[in-house]
Image 1 (tube, rainbow, N blue to C red):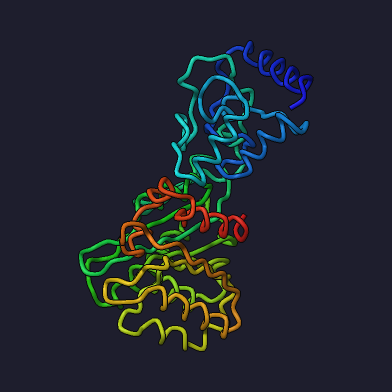
Image 2 (cartoon, one colour):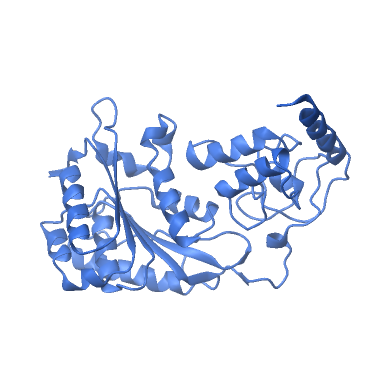
Length: 339
């Protein structure tokens, strides 16, 4: 960086550090004040610092790492949280609030936390629905977990929270502990109805995602509602005694308008099924039906651990290697189709 640019940045930061503390409520990390934490916030900081972009209306929000200054490290911190399993921003996050840190940054304005009349305040009648703590209209994502019987596969709570942090209304409805598929179909359909009742939901921007048996049920839901969703994410779909092939032969499949993302680990051959081969065939059948599909094969898990367990948490494997970070792939896919 040129010395003159460095001096200018330091001078600007020095000036802002002298401003009085306090001001509006805000969401830490929401540098561009759009009510969500995503890649655009990191880009916004970089653009302001180095390319003459707009100044953040709330410097405390741009201080993602809460070190009482706004600099390159805040953009790095934000991107690390989103894509590399890094630490979440400190309070106030993920909801609106005042800065508990005594520094001189302050917050001149935060439209998402001002308590005004811009957009709906999120409310939900069903417990377990996650949403950004801000006014606005947000896209929605229904997550369907894996498992059968009384076992739960995947990360329902973590996924719900991660979706809200990324600016979505997220719902991870737990299904009844029954092995047969029909009760699961009923629970998933009920979950969709409950999601659609959320006041701040933008019904024109919807996605469904699922893992293992939840992926099967997500495909079933998309076929039953062929024009409702913009995106469908299938993670290591389960065969369920051949039901998945029956679904892919359903004539309604060709009417589905959503784009599909299919993800699976290359060593996902356990629990009585070769999920990698199943995922490959699902991709092929979706293409034959004329649908838009992105297929993402993920590397084998280390230490001979079955690849099916990759999807048991949102970000644990992101800390091992970015190559295992399926969540980054899913969020990028949803970002392009819902925002």
